[in-house]
Amino acid sequence: MEDSCERLCSTHFCGDLETRVRSYMEFPGRVSPRDHIAVALSGGKDSSALLLLLHGFQPAWPDVELTAVTVDEGIGGYREETMDAASDLAATLGVRHEIVAFTDLFGKTLDTMVKGRENRACTICGVMRRNALIHAARRIGATKIATGHNRDDEAQSVLMNVFRGDLPRLLQDSSSGGQGCFLPRIKPLSVVSEREILTYLLVRGFYRDLPECPYSSSALRSTVRVLLENFEERFPGTSENLVMLRGSLRQSLPRSVAERGLRPCRECGESSSGEICQTCRIQHLLQD
Ligand code: SF4
Image (cartoon, rainbow, N blue to C red; front, side, top):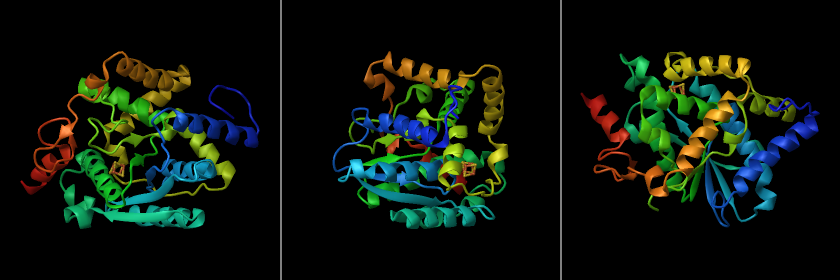
């Protein structure tokens, strides 16, 4: 199976998916000799496939180091099982595994942070988790961060930024790290769909049925996701077109514009599109 409607046996399906992800990685600047890649591993299917794939490429890049990084946000009834899945996978592959918890960094679990404002859970979680990931990556001396965003996630992000009227975010490209002072981020699964990832895990025998985050249904993303799924069914290629459109927009602008606004936060020094980064803004909000 493949999204282009080609019918492939399981061996060729896996080979095709691996080739596409590897081509992404081989694009200039994505992986360099002696890189130390912090692989964001939530334990869910995307991040598990990401670690599995990058680990599989390692014989070709013996001097590239991988460390799996799991952020424990503190989400009761959900995180415990996914944390176990993350630890099991890292142990099975023999990849070093680092865990960073919201309680250690911010003094609170996500459940506590969002009490009374559950409808904003994903916004708060996304910002704080990104900060936690950067913190952990710095702590281990990583040179890059790899995340498991797939093509559908990326298409959803494009549409969400359009719906919010957020042009700077739509154009912002953090893949270079911006101005040389932030950790570059790569998204090797952005060339494959969620369906393909699920199939890949099933074929490779790494699929694990895990609970869904209790906050996921309240997010704008979940509405956009359903919308895009309907579009994709009626007009195949919609998601890929959206991602390509963003890429074309970014390419048509000077690099400085795509990186525009990425500067150190006045309070914590982390990457920010304004004077104060979103993590600091949220921390102020949580104190009120
Ligand atoms: Fe965080 Fe929202 Fe994802 Fe749950 S669904 S882990 S709250 S971003």
